[in-house]
Length: 104
Image (cartoon, rainbow, N blue to C red; front, top):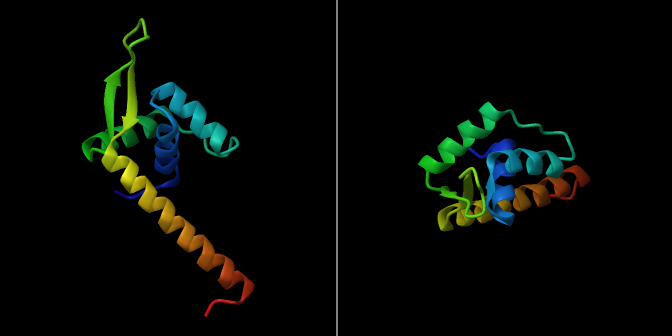
């Protein structure tokens, strides 16, 4: 799966704790300091793909009177998120060296 910034924010939101859709929207906006505002179409399209790829799973919140659907990372999703974060760290180190003119 291609990990775009919106998908990364969704995964990071769910890495902290399980959340329902609206809470993911709010958390993504908060993490990006208001720079990324996910539309519901973008959110639910990404959630559908993440469900299909078994990176996340759906469950019913116990304390919700409306039976809202919440989402949480699977073991596969957490492993893939860790790999993506490691990839980003590597790229950040490389970019820092390149910009400083110190890359060997």
